[in-house]
Length: 99
Image (cartoon, rainbow, N blue to C red; front, side, top):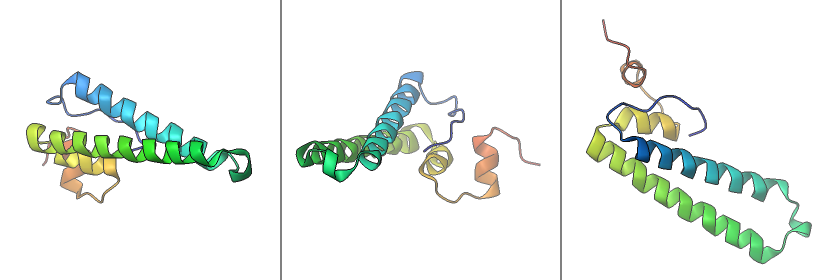
């Protein structure tokens, strides 16, 4: 989810934009949670950020499910999730013809 590469053309731009937004929100929250020392952060604020990150991750997973099931973007989603792909999956993500 941290590497930027083009989404399949079959995915509508508004869904690609939403995915980008969700990933950025998660990155920002995770950075804030890691960077601010526990003793300087209000425990309630930390819980709020952790909860927000979790709900954002839930929304992202739902979006990825939509991309897989409605737009046949399984290889793209697997790559975004950091899952292991076959060479053919990578080729498909990069729109490189086989052969």
